[in-house]
Length: 535
Image (tube, rainbow, N blue to C red; front, side):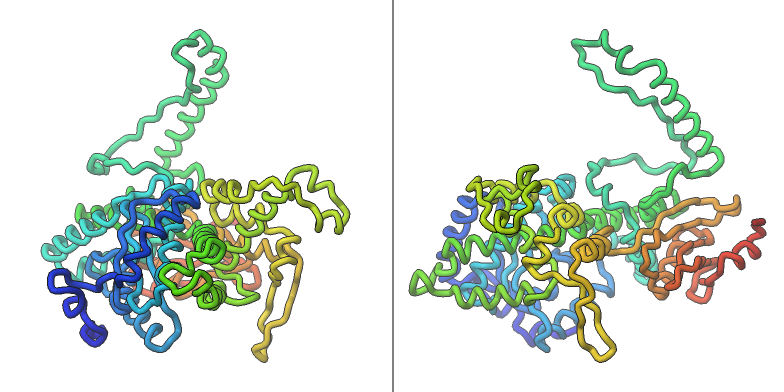
């Protein structure tokens, strides 16, 4: 790992009494003005704490996922080295970082200019507003700074008791399945559970429609005899499925299922529960990357450019705007970029314009004249209100699905590009429906393949049967092999994964033991022969 003293350790910086990088006086002077402007703009964020970091410290914190203390593992050092190389060779630069906690920690780079730091603070407060108000973050733990530190302490104790290599090997296998979760479960409220007893029965109660206590006489009309009979049949069906070891529907949360059902030692169960909590904490961020970055970019644009905060600490009221424009252009990625900053930012600008001018609703949709559409302006001024509504309720898929249409596509020149053998890019399509379909596929399930557990006891042989929801994109074989081996390691069961190859032909991966050499690829016909299944 790179030597921190090569880039200046925080021990060597700061004042005589306070170690670390001190906030520059010119920035410290204008921070209250930034907070005031953000509040007047309507941002509702967690109490902010601003810290300055050197670039190697920024890389270190970023490699830990934004948190300074984690459990010991080789992947943190690997990610740190990658970030350091990228920074030193001019491939990328982390201007700021903000985490979803209360209080909200905002990390600024000490090599930033004054304008950069003013911009990134406004940008980060936009993120904090999103974390605090977006529906998908409502049940995330806002005290994860302490939780991550506690996880690190508990895992270190297990390492000292059971051996570092043994614990790290277990963590390696758990991390390979950390994306096999049901993102919607991030909405679930976390509850402390009793220790898992393997020999237990799950009791089910019939569901009932709630009746107001002052109108109990209506209960028989709401919870009818037919409804209650259907509930009893549902419970009977579910209990029979439990007795036979069947699943009534595919389970997308494979990580959670293994956590609850695998025959693990107590220390393994505890580590798996901790890593599952961490995976669910990050899940909403993957679901809202475009909306979140788009809103933060929208906030810094409105505050820095339109309201003139670019001049804070400058010699004149119009200073800093050119520097801001250059940096903004770099972040958005150019004219034909579809990165989350550019796509989210443009979508929100379009939403603002449409709701300001009244370009929505049946009256607008009935307009057929191009000239009338161009001149349409009802002066409603509802754009900002609509954006804050979108921030509360939308994730990336909903945002793209509702607002990415042909008018938007033509205005911001979003094309479907194809790279040719000679390295050139050629426009394949300008059809918004084609581009939207690809964008939704890219953002659904955080851009990851959707894999579900179909049967935990396939053919009555204790085999776990998984199924890939094939959408034309093939699985990456090295990842498949490692993931199936890890599932086998954690459950002790053989694993089958049904998918398709690039030609759409059925293919089945079979893992029967621990080790990459134990993963085999079978055709449907060979699978039937080997497992004795008649057609």
